[in-house]
Amino acid sequence: MGTMGLAAWARQWTMKRAIALALAKRTSSLVTTSGDGAKSNDICMAYLLDRQGEAKFLLEQFEGSQLQGKWSNDGRYFTDDKTIPTFELQDYQLYIQYYYRGSTFYSVGIPKFLLLRCSPWPWLSVKYDRFLQSRFNKRALVRQARIEVLDYVLAETVKDRKFQIRTTSLLTHLYSNRWVHRPDKDELMNYYTFIIEALQESGDLAAGEHGGYRPTPKALNTAAAYFEDERRHNDNKKIQTRIVLLTIALTAVGIVQAGAAAYEQWLKPPEVFTGTLGGQPIDLIQK
Image 1 (cartoon, rainbow, N blue to C red):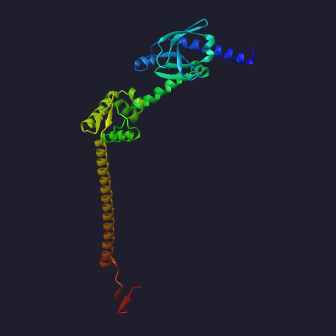
Image 2: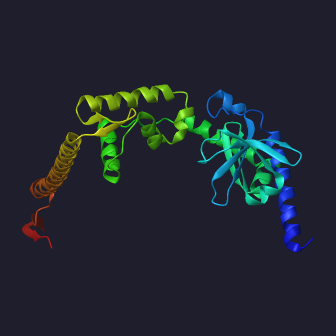
Image 3: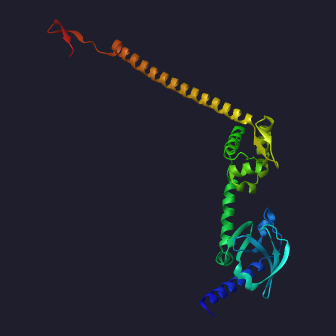
């Protein structure tokens, strides 16, 4: 057996072992990816990628020298039953999705999958993620006002004219996807749904497609008027602050001047003293 033949045989053998490990974790064709049901997951879904990196085959069984599963013509829907002999594995690359305790790990190629499958990394990753989620759940979240939501919508619309806002995407933008696992997630949903509905009622948002909302031309005028008022308010505050500082400075100067006048009037000793020396009156001049 030549060097290339040995390398191909070793790759095929390793690939078959990896497929066997993955299928041993395939307890169902349906995977729960959210909610409490996902927290008990320990499932692998194995696919074969073609040379262009597109998923073509969903592995279901491995018997002898035959791989059985579902074939896909578009890389998305696996509907056609198909059997692939193991010697054809050289034409594919192994891609595995590992669903573990509410998290999903992706691996392309054999080494990364073996690392996930044979190391404590998934367990450590899940534990660390739950620690971060616990800290996030204890944090008080700052709620955004109507104008701040509208300003975000306008900024995103400038970047993408087809942008539409939805309550879930807004929450993810503001707080990351960790908001989904907070105990007060329903309260957050209700609050920002009410904000969006209020903006629609005021004419700043209009219903779009698939439950989304888009800004209207009025939204730009609303934001411009608000920020102009805000600028004037800040300018007035600066002017008032300067007036207060000037008043304090003038008051301080007045106090100093009054103190100096009082000193001159009542406390400063006279420059000429009248007295006697040897019974004779004399005038003493202070120097």
